[in-house]
Image (tube, rainbow over all chains, first blue to last red; front, side, top):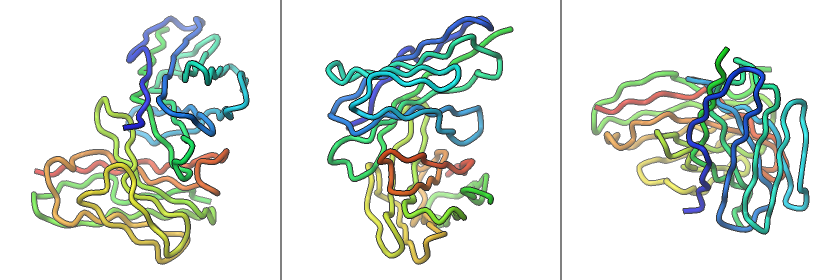
Length: 112
Length: 114
């Protein structure tokens, strides 16, 4: 299986703190994407980073990619209660024919 | 612009029954796909389509059929439901697949097979 792993599986922080979650994958990729899923809802695309990029920002989100270690991290700064959700990384791996492989997800809880 | 619409939202089936999960998108996307989500497993690709008339298998295709007669619709058929198919199913669409393009997901269909 090409499925990636995310770490930690669950994370609980206080509002205002930063949240960092990591993703590891197994094969060479074209790009890596992060998604958010609120309980009982579909996935929402957050950010995409290409294999030739090392860091990308979008609002309070910062994503890094280390292709030599086959890993990525998602940092959410100044977290809010509304950030409570599950976060998934997904990779488009080379030779995968435009298909995405998802990680197992990190459940983030931001407490007031 | 409704995005990706899935029906039904919830369904309970008896073992051996068949049913179709409907998926429609109004964004004129070429790529559509079906995933299932099980606890602790992330999303796994069942089938996908790169355009009308073209479908292919994903990671876990057994027990499911798909067709793509139009650009808008991509139904998923369970031929003979089994308890192992109890899961949450997500339909997704995008232009040009995952290659640097945002993928839009439906809200999910919760299926229980008893």
